[in-house]
Length: 222
Image 1: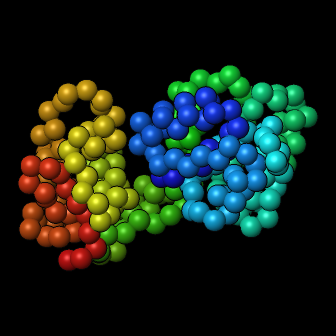
Image 2: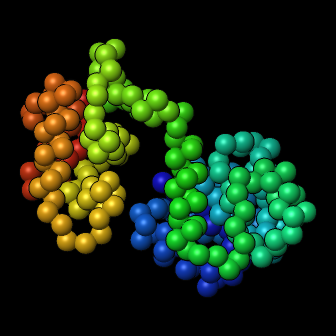
């Protein structure tokens, strides 16, 4: 997931960039409104963190310009402006959320996750003959619904969303299990075996392939 940060205070911008990269996001930074708008319009980003008071172009105007051509990308204002009138003005301009400075980094991360989750609810994920409908929490195989446990479902969704990329065991433990300390990654094999059994996949199939000693990779090539 790619996040665009538009923030003129270099210290704040660098703090956000470093912290969000550690959370696994790809980060773009713009230090003024004009360059922020240019990056928002020229590059595909998944969410925009936008300061209100910016040189060259105010954040409120950047937001309005983005919304002329892009109605979907979530925009979160990060600003010291906090009156009800200003909040309403920001929301009317097309912002999805409003976080007052100074803010908790942990709260920001959770807000970002919520917006990503909301954006992803309407998409349909697919992997060969497997389809997932997140809004209904359904896994479909050959037009038949397959019952997975919550952890099995989360693991399958993670592999499909990272289709074509090797997902290491440590990445899976960090991102799916949300465990950020040394842990026995062998538990992943237990869930993977259960997923394969329920979806009638064998270990040799390329839909979900084991990379020995590393992790797994999902591919549409069968």
